[in-house]
Image (tube, rainbow, N blue to C red; front, side, top):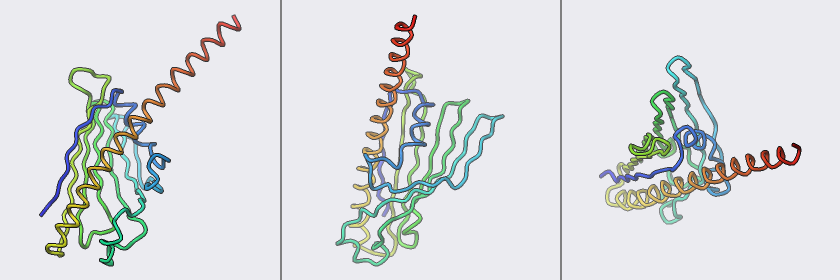
Length: 189
């Protein structure tokens, strides 16, 4: 059986800002389970205005100790690989990620598409799908899938909440720095 999660979220910011924030959001104190992020590959196609990247994300294992009785799940950290394409000409960002740690027994994948909002081109729509399939564990695999599905849903909503917070902070900092500059100009004039 395959357990899946789908979410849709609107960021009230332009896709260029959302993409930049996504690339820089971790590690972050709002999500301490993401311990490290390492860029494995990146390239710019300036002619077609596409930025490609591939990253390794190290996350703290959140699987409950009761499920860690299975040796393959009893690890301190797990690794996710994320691959992404930012198409500046079409104003889209596509992401694909999968868990590298449990591949013998589990297939955990996620895909995300960020596009401009139909009615407001300064907003960004995220459509995300995730799936988890546990192999070779019979009925116990269904329990693990159910847990993984809940964890994936929680993680997706937490990630969008972190993005919203970071985007809002950036907007506030921008307004604050613009206000500071203009006040300074008036004082010196």
